[in-house]
Image (cartoon, rainbow, N blue to C red; front, side, top):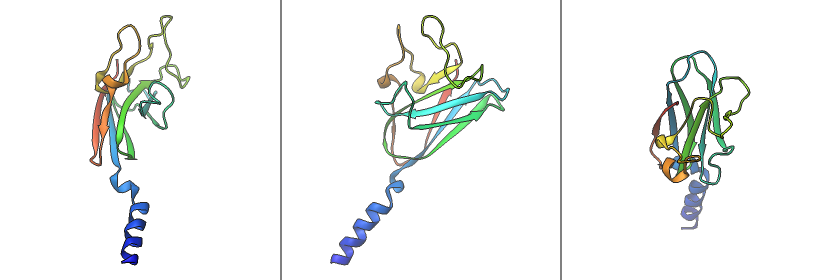
Length: 136
């Protein structure tokens, strides 16, 4: 009995990724000129800041695909932008609005400010998930 309990405990400790899922961001309307598209998958605490899960891809086509592997289940929001001037940050105009192509999951838009996490959030379970985002 003790050996069975130990085996179950070891299995639970060694297989946390078994409940994780791959999340694919399919980003449309990119300028297909090699400029970098930055993508993040953010928890509520990280939203609109630097997120633990991030990646970047050069836009060789008008659709850029970013894959996040083994994402733990939870609630996330995706943010993406295409860096048009190569400074590795999302530039803003004098009013604080993004001045480079950008998108947030579920096409969330802010009203007189940035989008809210609750409008952008998606549930990540143990099943693969694909999010479609259109750069503005």
